[in-house]
Length: 209
Image (cartoon, rainbow, N blue to C red; front, side, top):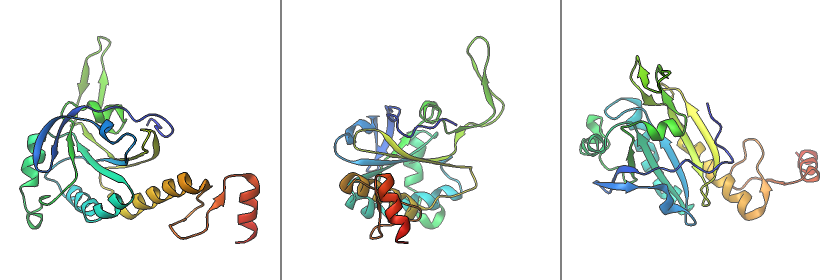
């Protein structure tokens, strides 16, 4: 599993569903210099755990927006599948009402570049991709700052849904560090003491707690 933290986020250029409409040429570059991005992968449309995550992020969308952070989802389905999924009411297992973009990665290149592709596959000596199982994305999440650098990543196996409040906490930690120059200790949350970004600062914090 590649560690992308500290590196420029791999570029994407793909179809996506934005405000209920299929658009081409969707890129995260539109947020550079303007917003952080929580970019998360989910395995498949029309499944069980995935809609719970998609709705959970949507329920906290205003909180992310207050923090100048965009939320963008992605799976290896087509944009047409995403659009159909968005037409199914929540009570029937669909994701009607989701307001953030959902990127289509039907050729698996985005999930591969972010190293979250799941499946039994390999490349032959001739460079051909072969697979003996379905290839879908793990539940990967990447916090990308306004300069396009990955600051946090988390990858869960398929059965394990994520905690949206933890994603918000990481956004808060990044913002706090950028604004105050302090570093955030274990279990830090907004309003708690942080530490000066130096050995002396750490020692002072530990001595007072």
